[in-house]
Image 1 (cartoon, rainbow, N blue to C red):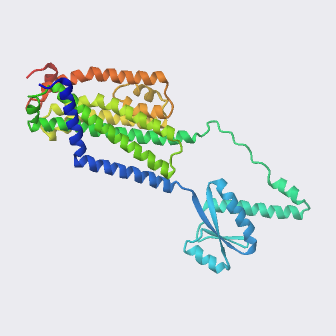
Image 2: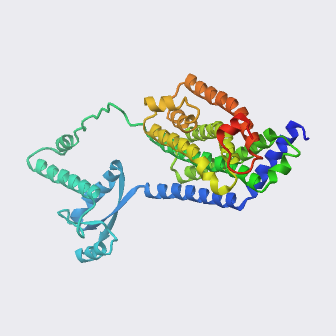
Image 3: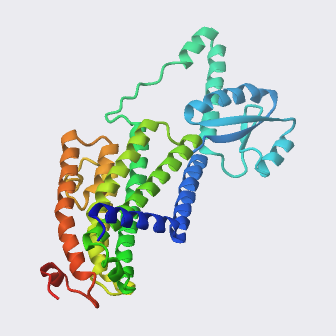
Length: 391
């Protein structure tokens, strides 16, 4: 037989290369990248600056329109001006959508049916200010006194819970990370299970086990598929960050890089924990058609963990999120959110990682034994029988 290390490496390399060449893997990776890039670009396009076109008719409108144009950016939008020689020309532009509203002689605002609220509000405020200034000057105030009266400072606004823009962006990154982890853990767990049952149904496993031990075959398969999943996640993360930075939707690359690192770390920990269980799920059934039944409990476990992880994106400090981040089956989908959002102490992170690593080391020998006892049997195998090693 091959040495443990040599056989282990051969199986891992075989799984990595064969899966990477698989058309379904290439297509799914391409689709994932296209969806990710499309989502980022659409978000950047829709989240861009709002812009309104304001038509101007008559000399009396020019000063007001320029004041609207200057005030718009401070209120979160931009206003462009277009001058018309007559009201009829402005009406035509208004009807064909060239402008959103028309200011006529500084006295009227024309719209097709309803003016954009933001634009109309600024026009009304600017116009009211100008009319008030004229009335104050007519009452005998000097221009300086009018200016002081109209430019009183606004009331200060004090937030009890200040909005942290970086925290909002971190939440988006955390959500995407948890979503990616959920998909990857299920996809690559299924690959492990389907690979096992495929080898069992085709009797290829009998040939393989004539030259290597069951534990070498199982652990090599897990390592090869895990490395491929890690590479795919890394590719998705790099492409996502690059496109997001180019599109201007991310303004904190350091935080985003930390998020990608957290996702990769917990994919590794979560995959090695779950993969042994998925391998057993594949070993105890004779056909691919029966695989869904044995995978259902694991799928539900991952789904519940995913839902807890999503809730942790909204509030990572809840008791549920804290407890779930310490449980080995849910930690991979909860810890990334708490890490990215800064709701995690160092000792909690180390404790959670230690728990899942310890659970994995305890689980792998048990799963290897069950796999060894089940993979060469024909027909459906009972869990209790493979635990006891009965035939």
